[in-house]
Length: 126
Image 1 (cartoon, rainbow, N blue to C red):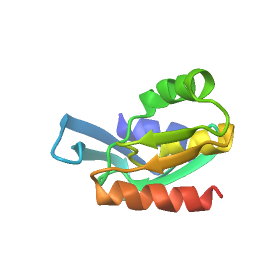
Image 2: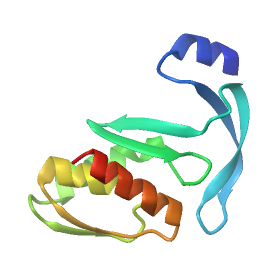
Image 3: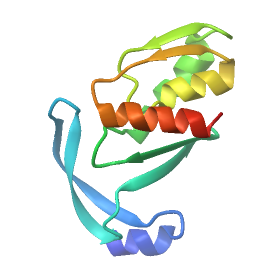
């Protein structure tokens, strides 16, 4: 399965993993099994024009939350609003709210790797 996915989706992806078990631990990460491709878990995700860079082994990431992030930005956030995100993760909501609505953001996360990736991605996105 992994090899088929890799063959069909290259060059967009380099690695196919299978999530094992449940999210756990203080940083809400999960174990993965390498199914095909490079043994490299550093990813570059583009969500609504925002580039996010992180290591999937070190942080929590859920692509399926994109819809919730979009809903909040389009329906809940006001232009130039101050947003406090206490569980910012790699910064998808924070960075998108800045680029889409000019919001000011106070961001924090328990996971120091997530904070580092959030800061890096924010810098890269201007």
